[in-house]
Image (cartoon, rainbow, N blue to C red; front, side):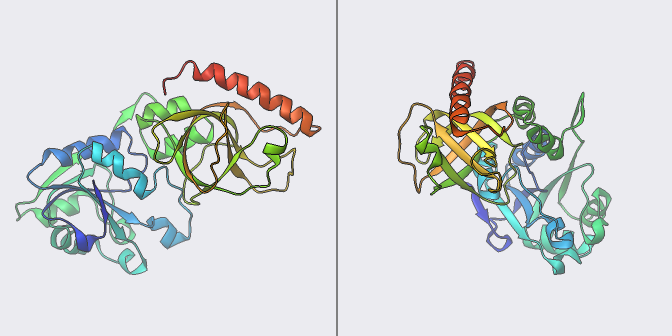
Length: 307
């Protein structure tokens, strides 16, 4: 299995690409391919953790993929290790030249470096591809520069994927990711209101650093830990306007036509299509009637998807 490691544990020498690789979209995969092709060295991805903007500007950066979620995807692409470089105020002051020398060359022992054409790094993002070229000109280290990948809508980027997910446009997000978007959470105790009206739900505790799609009710596949079976489900993401409008936003999953004790288990949820926005109903009975319609609509959608 691919390793999630610190710089001190790196298997050297490396063929390496540096970046956030959030979403592992087509542009990222092009970079990764150039890393893997240099197969005499250990194919490696290096990312800063936490995100530099979190440290420098106290700006929360929600991720399309948390580090551990990237591991199986990177492994399938031929990467052998994901290196997390601890980012702090001290590292932020490191000059671009010293970053190349101390981290890329000395610590990670890079023999082949792959970066995107717009790659910036070092103190105040002062370094670019020319910095790397100058630092390795008298060495045997190779540099591969990958052009920015675009489609008819413009540059392929993690930001565009986030925008699509925020708009609940899962089909186009799927196309950009080249895979289904999903997230994981542990089932925690709720108030049992769903069960009391005939629609039991699993309340999920989601890592607060994970990016979630726009609020609403979705048809979704749910997979229970240590299982490969995808279960037809309804997912509610957001508040509960009919039950209690003051409750914070949450993720709840109802397994359609299944009665399974899920408490304490980890679930993987793959939303596939938004059914509706959240609505405040006059009473619980009307809410229950709408959930029945949601279930019927979801079942029609599932017929068009492969598990």
